[in-house]
Image (cartoon, rainbow, N blue to C red):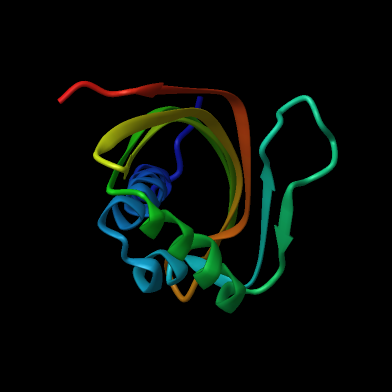
Amino acid sequence: MIISGNEPDDRLQIRNLIDAYAHCADRRDAKGQMSLFTKDTHFVVFMDARSDKPSMELNRREDLASVFDELNKYEVTTHFIGQSTVVLEGERATGETYCIAHHVSESEGKRTLFIASIRYYDVFAKVDGKWLFAERKLIVDWTDTHAMGV
């Protein structure tokens, strides 16, 4: 297997992009999260992995603000990024990344934990030397909700 001179750096930049998405989500930095996408991005959510019909579909970076602001309804979140695969193709790349997302909410003094097992299918584009999401499909494989202790 021959590795091009830029491949290690490109792979690191893409991994940093994937991690930045989760970090911005957990810090409630919607503007920062939006800046990780191309202007004409395609963002698709499948809340049921068995369905071929998306729950949500957006086609512009500025439309992402309301989606990312939805996380404000939670007291705290933790998006733990797991394994990912990336295939580089010049100035474009594709990849799949696994994530376990924890969402803590509180109502009437009771805390609830919502957990989602997520897969992201991504198309990345290198724009002005920087890797961005050109397309992100968020697929929820399973969820669990339960009451939390103290």
